[in-house]
Length: 617
Ligand SMILES: Nc1ncnc2c1ncn2[C@@H]1O[C@H](COP(=O)(O)OP(=O)(O)OP(=O)(O)O)[C@@H](O)[C@H]1O
Ligand SMILES: [Mg+2]
Picture 1 (cartoon, rainbow, N blue to C red):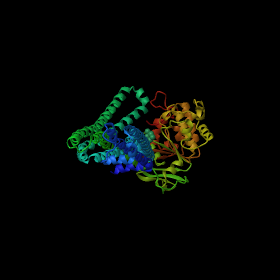
Picture 2 (picture 1 turned 90 degrees about the horizontal axis):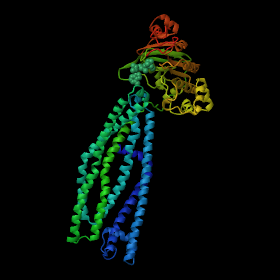
Picture 3 (picture 1 turned 45 degrees about the vertical axis):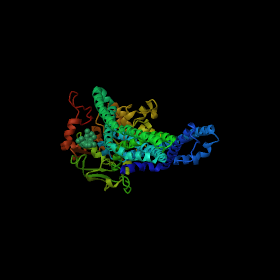
């Protein structure tokens, strides 16, 4: 029940449209019942059974009489017949106006509620930490955002809107039936709960099957997403056949589970119709007996009774379908709520302090961090970074360098120990304010599928001149000018239309534009070609001027330019100092230096080029 209520909550802001839809539906159903009631005078006139309405009236006939009696009794047969026919046409037209209003307002309420749900879902995603994204497949999230919310929104349309419309129809029809013959109708109404019992066990399985199908669809989306992103790898490794089989298998799982769910969900409707038809046949027999044998019911009433009873089949069939729809909607809603119930672990509590800017020193004090339980990646890191200093971090691949720098913008927080900014733990400051005062140029440059200028400005509202100036300083202006539409060129998904060096220079321009006092650089491990490397290096050197810099270094030139070098090995800082001193000390740094940066003859195994190669793989 809680979940129904939670879904209904989304409809509440749009209750006026929804109520309008309901009112229109009730209006249409009542008019529909009225046209059926008009059958009685029509049959009487057609078969010339006295006047259009008799003296001794059933409740239905009384209503017709009160409403339009004067008109259909007319001054003769022909005018009666004409008036009744005109009335049926007019009321039917009016009813359909009601139907259209009900549909439109209902769809409006549904789409509005769905939009709110999607907006909330997206906003919630933005508030989740990096860890969540590393645990969750993006395809599963896409599937939840699109397919599962669609499925949940069935609740608003099918469940509520149709339920009310069809439900009102059932009530009106049953009301007419009662008025025509309460004995016959009582039998039917008593049979209904018995029929409903038949569906109970089916419905119980419908939701679990829809949940299985939704999971399979999420997997399918996830896999598609992965293959599309890795299009280049798939081709270069000629893995098309492998990917086709993998996708085929996921697709089969999805289709199988969907078919099973749909098969179950389809059962109630035909079953209920068949059962109801059986009931009607019984009614027919009973009605015939009452009319001919017992003389209790006039023939035109029996006819009308049967027509209404037959008309009742369709809404009954629909209403019988609702529980299955509801189960389907709930299966989708549960997957959506599961994400909405994830705690917002990347959102600052309202009271958190704003980082006022660095005055003196950043200190990592005995910092421990693990991505999983006790699998420590950082094991008591101590590191000091003075304002205006450049600190280079070196170490083998997987030593924990990227993890270490992620602590500053609070993408992750220490499990033990703390990062102190002028003596205040970073966790006291809001993530927003910290992130605003620093820029990160990461190991892998992420470019969005937008124009070059939008990629440089990234979310900031800045003048074109400022963008161009940043691009110039980043050595990017020239190549941008040569792109087909200059700064307005769209760079393709993840910037695939640019070279690696170009992407990096755009990232540098983005950082320059932010002009942050603190800079975090995670040098790319892959060596670029020497010309673009030179311009990237120049750009980075310019970016580092007059800032406090924490840089993960893979190149000798970077290390030589640093004020302090920290050597990190398996999660601890093992050495610390200036280049010359560290080399002289002959420790871990000197080993790394020997292996990676010492110039060797061309036939050596080192990838070194002028001793300035990427150091660890
Ligand atoms: N999201 C994650 N979940 C679990 N483990 C992770 C995650 N990211 C990194 N690791 C693990 O943490 C360790 C340190 O990774 P990190 O990225 O900090 O290394 P690095 O020093 O930057 O290496 P490289 O020089 O190759 O970039 C590695 O063993 C890695 O497998
Ligand atoms: Mg790294």
